Image 1 (cartoon, helix red, strand yellow):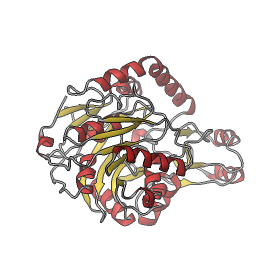
Image 2 (cartoon, one colour):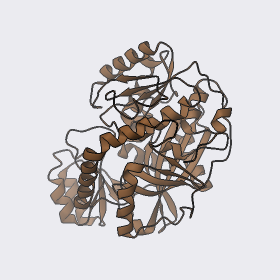
Image 3 (cartoon, one colour):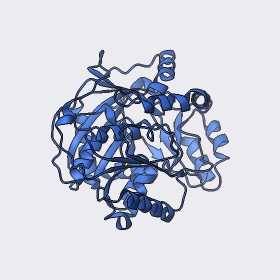
Length: 422
């Protein structure tokens, strides 16, 4: 495991805590553990909202206290804001908010007036994170600012789907339009590849009077490659930390969470991301997913997550800055040291990379830009100075986790999950 010592030279404000904010039931979240470790190793007091006292985040030695608060992500915003303020009062001093999901990022942006004073967070136009997290909102912003994205339509009725099916090019991809909203009955279980007009019409009959879907151009994996951008932008939408990498494997295959990725320098991609963020006026941490389409030589933006990504610890620059450290330093008035990203680093999510590896070997898919050898490996769960999250993950994952992986794999085969779309 690679462990940078550069972070020891950073001097954050240790009087300002960090708070991991998550809404919903997903206890095995390695991104939250990574954020706790990243700031905790610098001496920043770390707190987290957790589902129970036995999540990997809750048992980290770098966590000062876990606030047990089970949520679904579907609660009324006023209830979530009140709960967050209660947590803030218990911490007793302003804390930097670190959201790990879209629900949290949207809530913070839309309730800045209530949260200001108790917490520190980037000031952003209130409705922007919700629009960026929406498939339709993101697509409209891409069109408005000339950023390539897959062609897409947003049908409002079954009749519109019938008209579209008669002239559309298949295969295509169906996604839930508002992916950040946790629906009781989503239109599709995830990113779904649809091969024929008949298949689309058959599936659409269950979408109700107002389909909440996006029908999107299919980018074949044989002609494309998955890239990721993680960055932190200040109040003027200037990048204080910018990183690019290539996704080697995900789970479910080609459609889900990053299982294995490498840092790869890509100035063209970094410039595209920086220009787009400047145009829309966003500030804060971003996690972008793009596909390079070899057919036309363009990077197409698939997802804009207005918060840290679970795999953010893949990226670090020479002075030891990752996006979470950049966030904390900037919001507390400290300089964010510049430096080149540590190229060639690899990130591995232990509990999902093995099944992903087996699936990718069967498919024959490879990522040409992945380095032949890693300059260092960052594991999502296992860390020599913080072992309990790894063993807690194993205890919670082995039986139900193996069953869940199988169900995801079966669902992916049944729904014909399309490569590279999340």
